[in-house]
Image 1 (cartoon, rainbow, N blue to C red):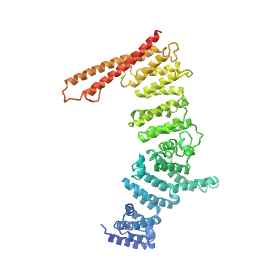
Image 2 (cartoon, one colour):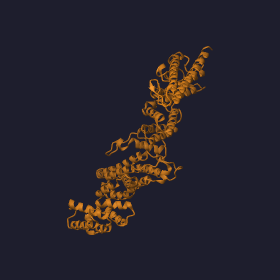
Image 3 (cartoon, one colour):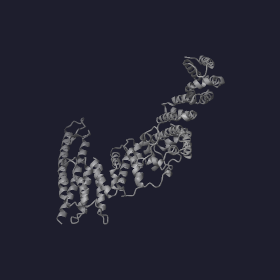
Image 4 (cartoon, rainbow, N blue to C red):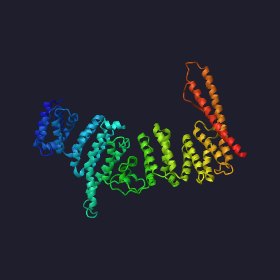
Length: 606
C-alpha cells in the first residue's frame, strides 16, 4: 500500500521522465505508474500537488495522453461535495476536460456514470452530463456514435430509478428522477440545435449544387439525427409509457409533462412529422436513409406512447392537421391501442384504454361500417379488451374496460353491430361476455321494433341466424349451468322479451316461426339440465349435512366434489351455504323458464 508521500514522489518521477520523451511515446509502465500514483495522491488528499503538476505548461502533453486516468478519484471527491480538497479537484477535473483526448474522456466519464444506488445514480448524472456534453462537442463531426453510446448509458441509468406515480412523489422528487429528466433534455439540446441548423441549411441549399460535394457531411448529419431519434423513441417507451402524466389542473408545474413536451419538440426539430409518426400504420412512409430498419427506427410501443400523449394529453396537438376525420384517426389509433392492450403492465393497459376511449368519443354513434371488421385490429382489440375486463387484477381497469367495450359497440352501425355480435359469440369463450353481448342484442332488437326504426338486421329473416347462436345450450343438458349462468339468464331474458313484445300475428322477429326449434335446442335441454343439476346438488347437500353430523369436532374442514371437480376446502357451514346458493340459482332459472312457457301457451291459445 503506497503512502501519500511515496505516491507523490513516484508521480513526480514519472512526469519528469516523460517530459524528456517525444510526444505520445510513453510506455505501458509509464501509464500504470502515473495512474496508480496520481489516483493515490488524490485519494490521500494531495490534490494541491497534483493540481500543480497538471497545470504545469511542461506537462500538458503528458496530461493530454494520461490525465483521463485521474477521473475516478476526482469524481468521487466531487460527488462527496464536502471534501476540503473539492476546489482543487474541481480545477483538475475542468482542466482534464479541456486538455485530454475526447475519446478517452468519454470512456472514463461513462465508466463513472455506471452506478447501482438510486441516490448515487441521480447525483452522478447531475454531475457528469454537462462534462459529457462538453467532451462530445469537442468530437466535432465524429460524435454521432459516441452520442448514441452516451445516451444509451444515461437512459440505462435513469431506468434504475424508482418512478414517481403520485402528484406528491413528482413534487417531492425524492430520488431526483424528474431532475434527471430535465438534465437529459439540457444534455441533448446543443445536438438538437445542430441537427436543426443542418436541416435548415439543407433546405436553403439547392439539391444539385451540393449533392456531390456534401454527401459525406450529409451522412454524418443523418447519423446524429438518427441517434437523437433513438433517444426520443426510447424515452417515449421509458419512462413516458410507464408514468401517468398529471393534467395542469392537478399539477401546474409538472416536470414529467415538461419532459414529454420537450421530447415531442425534439422530434419536430430533427425533422420528424408528429402527424406522420402517429398515423404511420396507415401512411406509406418514404424510404429513410440510415442504418436502422423501419420497425427498429420507429418501435411500435414508442409510437403508441406518442399517440397517447397527443390524443389523451393534447401535447403538440396544434401541430396536427385538422383534415383528418375522426374515423381516420380511430383507424390509425386502433393499431396503437392494439399494441398497448396486448401487454400485461397496468400502465400500458390504462393508456391503451384511454387512447381507445378518446379516439371513439370523437366518432359519431352508429357511423362505423361493417367493412371495418375485415381489418384485423378491429377484432383483436375487443379480444384484448375482454382480457382486461375479465382477468385484470385492478378493479378500475376492469370497469374502464367494460365502459370502453360498450362505447366501441355504440359506434358501429346496425350491420356492423350484427356482425360484431356474431363474432363475439363465436370467439369470446366467456359466459359473462356472452351474456353482455346477448343483452346488447336484446337492446338492438328493442330499438328495431320501435316505430320508424325498422332495419333488416335485428328483425325478420336476418335476425334468426343470430338468435340461433344465442338460444342454445353450449353442451346441451350437460351444460354447467353455474359456469354459464350469465349467458343462460340473458338468453332467457331475451326469449321472454321476444315472446312478450312480438305478437304472433306480426312475427316481426321471426321468433314464432322458429319457436319449435328454440324449444328443442334450448328450452327442453335447459329444463333437463336444471333437473339434473338440482338432483346432483341436493344429493351433495344431503351428504355434506350428514358428514357434518358424523365428523368429530376437531375435523372441521370438509372436501366436496361437484361435477367431478373438488370444491375448495371450506368449513361445513360455508360448504352448505354454497350448495344452497346453487340450488337457489336453479330455482331462479326454472322460474323464468316456466314463465316463458306460460307466455307461449297463452299466446298459442289466442
